[in-house]
Image (tube, rainbow, N blue to C red):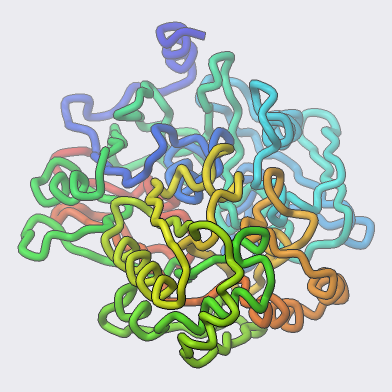
Length: 484
C-alpha cells in the first residue's frame, strides 16, 4: 500500500489533530535502526520506542491490569491463558479482533521474506507458547507448554522482556498500532506521528510527535544541547556545559565480557587462562570511572538467585603457559561510537598480547550485533563487549541453554552444558547460574546506565523503572505553549 492510500485509510478513523499550528514534540533516537518496529528487528532498543504508537494486551508492573484486554484468566492449571479483548480500534479504523493476536505471534514465527523466526521467540513468555486459538472475535486462548507464573503480566506487555506491544502491519509492512500516537510518515531519518484519541492509555498532551534518527551519538548530544530535540532517548554522550537540558538516568543492564565458547577460547581452561591475563580493576575503572556500583554478578542486586563471579588472580606467566596453543588472531568486538568500550577493548588487547596472543579489535554498531550477518549470530568473535538485561526473575534459558544457540536462539556465547539445562529444568536457577560463571563464559564488569537528555521546558517525562520502555508515558510529554 502506497503512502497516500495509507494516510487516507488512517484519516477515516483519526480525529483531527488539535493545535495543528503548534510544532511537534521532538524525540531524538540513539538507535542504529531506521525503524521503530520491534517485529522487524530484534535490537533491544527498538521495543523501547514502539510504545509511542503501540499498546499491550495488559499493563501492571507487578499484577496484570487491563489494557487492550481485560485482566487475563489462567485456566487448566495454568496451561491455558484466556484473553478477552476490549472494544478498541486500530489506527486504520479496524476493530481489534482475536485473530490479530494470533497473527502477531505468527509474524514473529514467520517473518516476511522467509526470514528466520524472531529471536524474541526464544525469550519468555514467548518461548512457552504451544498454540494460540481465536474464539470468536474477542477471545484468545494461549496454550502453554508449561505453566509460567509471569505469563499474564509479560505477554505483549510493557513489563515483558522483550517489551513487545501488539501490532498489525499493512501490505507494505508498515506497523499499525492502537497507542496514543498514530504513524503518519516514515522514512530513514524520521517517523512522524499525530495524536490518537482511542488508546486505552489516554489522549496525548502533544498534538504531534516526531522521532528523528540521529546518525551519531555526538550528533544527538549536539541536537539536545542546541534545542533541536526536546528529548534524547537515550543520551550516551552529554555536553557538560549545556544549559538547555537536564540529564537523568537509570540502571539498565550489566556490562560484560562475553566469550564465544566455540571460538578460540573453546574450553573453560582457556577462558580462565585468558582471565588470568586481565586486570579486572583496570577494565572496571574504564567502564565506570566513578567506581559506582561495580558488580560481581550478572543479575540485579535485588535478584534472590544472583551468584558472584570469582575472578582468578592475575598471573601472566600462568596464562601464557595455557594460551600458547591458541591459533590465529583472537577477535574482540566492541560497540562502535562508544569511547569507553573502545578503551576496554584496547586494554584487553594489550593484556592478552602480553600473554602471547595475537589480538585484533573489530568495532561494530550495536544494532549490527543482532543482524543475521552480525557477530553474535555468525559467531565471528572470540570476546565481545555486551550487556545483559535481567529482571529479578531472569530467563536464563534464553541466553545459556544448549537449545538456544544461534542462529535461532540468543545463546550468543554458544555455551552448552547439560548440567546447566538439568539444573534449570529442576528449578535450581542459582545452581544453573553458578555453572555458567564457573565455566567463565561471561565476566561481569559494571552496571550499564541508560541516560536521558530532557529539555528544560519539557513536562510529563519521568524516568521509568528498570526495563520499562521510557515511551510508556509518551501521552504525558509536552512542551507547554509549543506542542499542545
